[in-house]
Amino acid sequence: MLYQEPLSYRMRPRTIDEVVGQDHMIGEHTPLYKMIQNGHVPSMLLYGEPGTGKTSLAYAIAGSTNKEFHALNATTAGKKDIEAVIQEGKMTRNVILFVDEIHRFNKSQQDSLLKALEEGTITLIGATTENPYHSVNNAIRSRCGQIKQLKPLDQSAVKSLLHRALADEERGVGALSIDIEEHHLDRIAETTGDGRTALSLLEDIVYASEQIDGEGYVVTEETVLDCIKNKGFTHDKKGDIYYNLLSSFQKSIRGSDTDAALYYLARLLEGGDLEAITRRLLVIAYEDIGLANPQLCARVMPAIQSVERLGMPEARIPLSVVTVELSLSPKSNTAYKALDTAIAHVQKGVTGEIPDHLKDTHYQGAKDLGHGIEYKYPHNYPNSWVYQEYLPDSIKNVNYYKPNELGEEKRYAQTYEKLGKLRQDGRKKNPRS
Image (cartoon, rainbow, N blue to C red; front, top):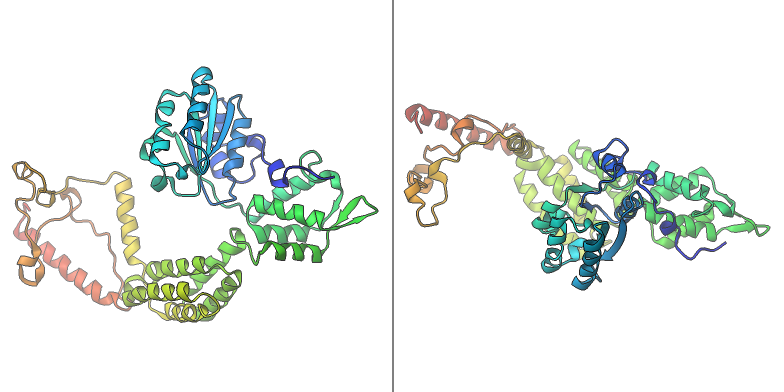
């Protein structure tokens, strides 16, 4: 039996109850699930990596309602296509417009949606692989009641999709009588890491397998490996193994286990994704090494540029050097931890009035408001330092930065302590500052 549509297309969820994974946003106890079940579909933006199920979720949402569903792809659609859907929405007030790759719409195209969204003429579901806070107009974002990030499916979720396809006689391959062992499904899930690719690979494997007496298909280890090889997989690029390797690589460096770090680097190199490795090294340099060895942080970027210029196999040489050096370096995470504490304070509403002497003076009338008048320019004072308050008065005694004394940070810690004492002395001498 042959089908016209690919297995991944046929197995798209028809309603939100058929969605696999994404329980954090569409599980039965989530607000979004309850809204849709109660007949209310808010405009929303869905973002996530390719294969996380953005398009499938949009179709599932539409299938859970009685609304008309129109799908556009921003790479090919224009303002006329948008206007046609809006006109239908004006007549029915019952239209969902799904725009795939909405970040590809230019500002004018995005703006053409604003009035219809404002008036409720259409319900917009936009999908993007880019962070919508950077790629979608603020005006669109503000009119979308939900901005949801889809996460890569874990191995168990991918296997659930495979089992569903094997059992479904109407849309899947359940009518084909397939003999496939469980460890083959594990291999497919490990290798692919997303539902669409996994279903595509399963379909290839089934039709590449031998038939018994013209009826059932028997899947062998050789067929599975051949199909994986032909697909160009080396390990799962977006699934559990991929992220587990990256995580183990970073944690080995953080734990100063050089041999373990080199082992996980070797496995990542077999996967061929140099960009992921170099990005992770840059994160490690600033997250785990930080102020304990800032010179090393600065050397990581030239090493990354060397990797990009050399390519494999020579790229392994600078990668090995920087991996060993990061592993053996003293380590500190105090800088970013300090910032995280400050961010948490701001998010909790811990704010205050910016001191007048720090406020902007580059406009007419600023000085009439008292802005910038008492500002002291540090470079005009000995050692380029002078006492004045920089924090709002309500939080002027806060200490976000908690230095340690490993590596170079010992010197920074001494300077931080010295400046703190000078600041306290200044407050005693200037109690109203």
